Image 1 (cartoon, helix red, strand yellow):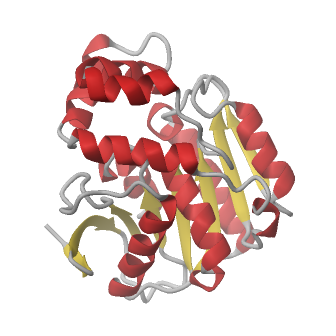
Image 2 (image 1 turned 180 degrees about the vertical axis):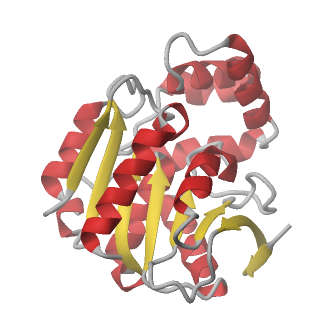
Length: 258
């Protein structure tokens, strides 16, 4: 399995697509809280046909070691180090939920690294229900079940919910708690207007975690951004409606010529 070393952390990543010699900008995917690179498999397969496509596991997630973080800025700097270690430049960064928070933070702090950003199921604030944070300490299994039900569309098969809950529980509870604390403290309400990178904002119309009004606010605040609302999709829009998401990203990047 491929890794890069960032400080003391070995960051696992998966990649598809042509070499970096391609004239198209490489695309890097950042997962959300309690997630891993696996949420992006359909995007890697599709978008990796024309350009280098990479999905990373944040520290303590997937196959990366480390203990996670409880601040978005800490994850931001890990991702910056990962980009440098991979020898990437002028990338397209796609972030889901907490990954979208990381992407916004990079766009503000290190805009020179980016050609464009895509924010999927994200917002300028990512408040977490207090009962979820408390529940992780008291009954982790029950809290994770609640999270999984919130992020998936109604009617999602029970076996899919169980599979995702089991995958999340393979991440240590302190790492999940740190992710949620990082989300809860995240607030770019005043700063987001300063994002100057071309941006696409994607949201499922049935998203209960980061509802469409979050995406609409991002779109209203980021000058020149584009908005894609995906029908019949919830918080895991890129897994539930991958073709719609992939077409939207491809069209956005084609218009930019990157």
